[in-house]
Length: 281
Image 1 (cartoon, rainbow, N blue to C red):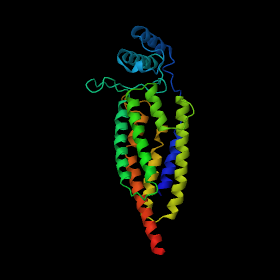
Image 2 (cartoon, helix red, strand yellow; image 1 turned 180 degrees about the vertical axis):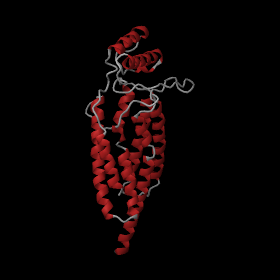
Image 3 (cartoon, rainbow, N blue to C red; image 1 turned 90 degrees about the horizontal axis):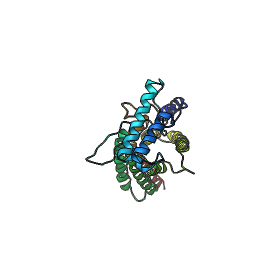
Image 4 (spheres, rainbow, N blue to C red; image 1 turned 90 degrees about the vertical axis):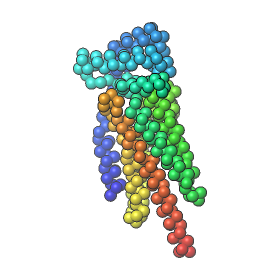
């Protein structure tokens, strides 16, 4: 049974959670001393999330500071790779002939673009639903929010500073009282688990009420909900490009297509039920 299998997978994911220290790198003296040099030499901003850090010499200088600190942790302290401002260090990609800004998280940018394209496909699908469909406007709005969200995700992972960070997290999780990275992530994960729990209750109820053919839509939704919880995993980036968050974005690429298929099947199911009710009357 798809619902049981995905529920078991969800429980297995929770067992992988562990306590971590989110940003030991940016608090270490090696990094702080290096950053002070950047500020004096290139007149970089004092605040770490200002826009000045994503350009030119300031970006290159802080980028160099991160790798000097990583080398110090590995070679001198014999410790694992530290995080900086709550994020892993990434290999930056320069494409000067396209955009003058370096791509800070290349894998997440590419996978976010892919998500944007599949969400656009979902939008086109729900636009073609019959006007009589009671949830058509809901799915249209859902798709439009997704388009905005993935656009903000592309911009944020390309150039991370306070504005792009706010746009990315606010569009991804609107239930925020004030902005704080740790608070935001905890709240978003908690909301994801709570929403998923509600979905699973509905899935189990509907599974027992439907015949074999109409259960296909429920299987699609079960996959969507389970994959959406993969963001709780975390590990050091592979080749300094691919981390768990980027893989989460990769995993969600087909989900708008699966959700669109679910919506189509649900629409057909509702039409079938309406026709049966008409015949009975």
